[in-house]
Image 1 (tube, rainbow, N blue to C red):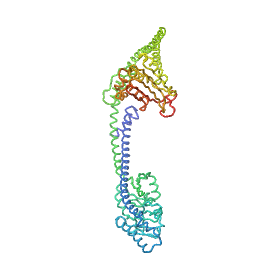
Image 2 (cartoon, rainbow, N blue to C red):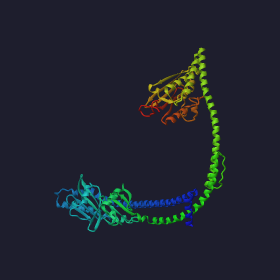
Image 3 (cartoon, rainbow, N blue to C red):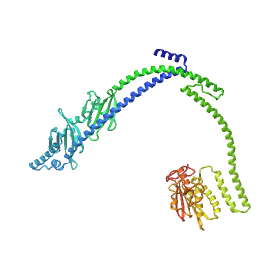
Image 4 (cartoon, one colour):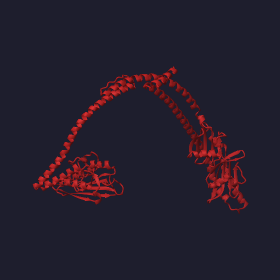
Length: 607
């Protein structure tokens, strides 16, 4: 069956070169790539997970063992510290005068010996204590290693050069090894000797025992790269060679990490206390043994799956091409301009869905064509209406000019002035296309608005302007000041009884920010309502100062508009005392027409 299917597929591909052959070949290639890719991805992921898990477990074991080692070493260090800093029993003996009597010398020496023997007796893990003085005297407790010339030993020189810090090392004499902790004894910043604590070498075996569960071995080296302890390391392992071991340790950055080299994973951990480095060795072949066996079994499963895919692809390709041919014949008819299409494939597979989707697409195209026709007709109507709407404001503007001319002829200067002010406002609203305007132009519009309101309130108030030269050309959003002036007139000045109203508008630049301050001597605002003015959609906002109608653009709207444009650091601040005054201070960025916006103390320019 497999042979016949293969011959059929080959015949399709080489002879017909049809879509059925392409589908058959694509099925086969995709299935092969998918199965091989999945198997390879699984193998790589499993291998990585196994390695990472092994490294993590090895690192945890090493860190735990080093923690136990540091705990034991700290106990030994405390003993050496106790001896090194003892003044009565140690330093006075090592620094005594040379002309003392033999009896006094005997008593002092015995005192030091009794002292270290007492410490030795109370520490079970210590096998020996030695105190070596620079004066040539030597004191011992337990079974330490004895040397005729300590100064000639390199490790003793390391102790003296450590300047009082503990030094950890391994000593071997004959077939016996011991772990040693040494530190210098200092008196008045001078080294007068050294103390050496000896611990049994077997203590390392007790601490590191059982850490080779997932490793073939590990070793511990001191700060001078000498092997202190090893377990399970092959004689041919590169880790045993000092130069190679030093290269491996140096290649692993930091105090803890790992690297893989020549099929071996090395896990490193360096102690902050002893400065000893533990190196764990993990052969990759031991980790990957089971995964490799499972990978080989999956290759056999892939071969079986490919056979199934080969048979299924033949049947599916025949079914798909049959429906595709029907769909092709129907689609060719749309080239003749027939946008009305009915599905011809009734199956629920992708080809049937394609047939229904194509039918929906043709229906949408048909409706789009009709909609474009309607839109073009509507567009022409809207263009005519827009032209008519543009004519209306100009008609009002021209009419106001006529009224102004008639008022001048009738010698009615008040009507002429009010009409002229309204014409200025209307002209600026029609001609302005920019969102920003200069303070000079904004104050011109504000002056026209104040002139109109002054006639309404029969000259009840006076508006004065104090604008610094630096602030005149600064740009602000259009129609930003008019709502504030309107509030000051209608809800402040208008409520005065037989009292002249004064409104002062100041503009100046301070600390790279534009300040615009509008102050009136009107009715003022109560403390309760003052706290509500800048809150969005507050009743106090729509009522201005003390109540009444407004222009529809409240103080909170102005405040929010500024903050939306320039950020939280800008906006309005209102200060008022009821029946006395109201001050609205506006804080804006300094913007000029020749540059950008700034918040710093540098010269401000605008975008």
